[in-house]
Image 1 (cartoon, helix red, strand yellow):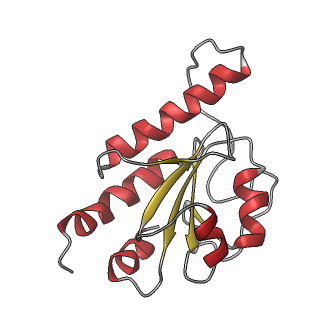
Image 2: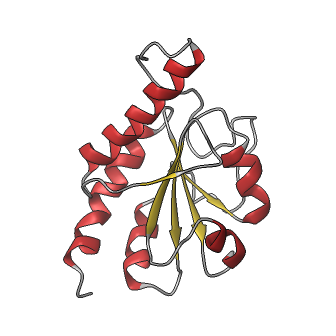
Image 3: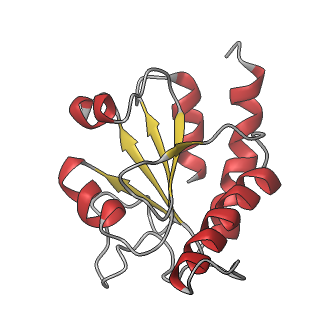
Amino acid sequence: PWCGHCKSLVPDWARAAKALKGVVKVAAVDATAEEALARKYGIKGFPTIKLFGADKRRPSDYGGARDAPSIVQSCLNAARELVGSRIGGQGGGGGGGGGGAGTGDGRTARGEFGGSAVAQLDASSFKRVVLESAVPFLVSFYAPWCGHCKRLQPEW
């Protein structure tokens, strides 16, 4: 309730997720239920946003502005890098395939938020959905008891 940045993120996060549908997949992990996974990625605060781009083993921390255009631009840059690497390092123009909260193989991740653009992941689905996917992922590690995270979840 006291953090203005967290409060202002909610509408922009929702707009970014909708804009990225079909280009970059958006997912969330309950870091309190998946503590080992959160530790693996150095999650210390909530929400922490990580971008799993071309090298899924080394996600980058999202440190950009907390507004829809900046979030979308960061994801598009990751998609452009991925496309560029696929054509031999020549800059890209466009994004990865796939759409919505699906896994890329026709399946849907567990606990998808009622048809929204965000997949809810656990430790077992994380590897299959994020790490083995051919497209970039923006993943929010959250705590369900956190007021800021609770306000973000309904928007996804």
